[in-house]
Image (tube, rainbow, N blue to C red; front, side, top):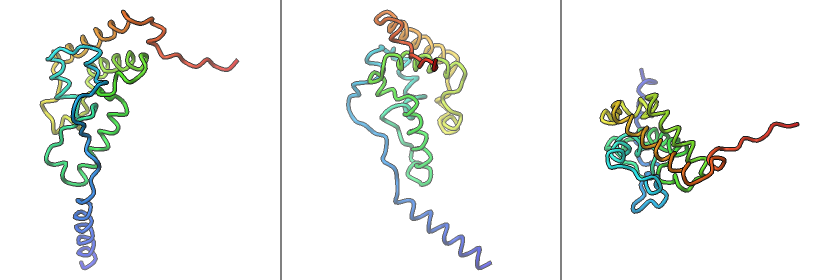
Amino acid sequence: MKIVRKIAIVLLAALIVIQFFHPKKNKTEGDQPNYIGKSFPMPDDVKAIMAKACNDCHSNNTKYPWYTNIQPVHWFMDKHIVEGKQKLNLDEFTNKRLAYQYKKLEEIADEVKEGAMPLDSYLWIHKDAKLTDEEKVKITNWTIAAQDSLKAHYPMDSLVRKRPTQGK
């Protein structure tokens, strides 16, 4: 019984100590010059959908709920944000190559249509982020329009990632 008590005390102490160590928050104030909506005009309804379902993990400005002040929750959330921004950062979108932009627009539509985004783990807490069929159509139509805009302004070979040729 004494060993269980000692383990409990050590775990409680560790839980208290980790409360003092938090990752840097994903907050950037001000204008985001490379935001996707600057090059691909986004209707207000699509902007609102993206804000509720995408921006927390795929932008430079996450809204942090109260429970992220508790560790290890903040570390868990930070890991999702870092991974989400590595895959797609809407605030750094136009800073990327045209082929990247074109492909990511296609991926956004595919992920939304398939229901792969937002992640289930995000939806457990953010019930309002679950996309309706109508919202999925709005995002998909917007991505198609953005791709069409790219096709209208650039040659197709600049929009497709060139694959390295195999050895001879």
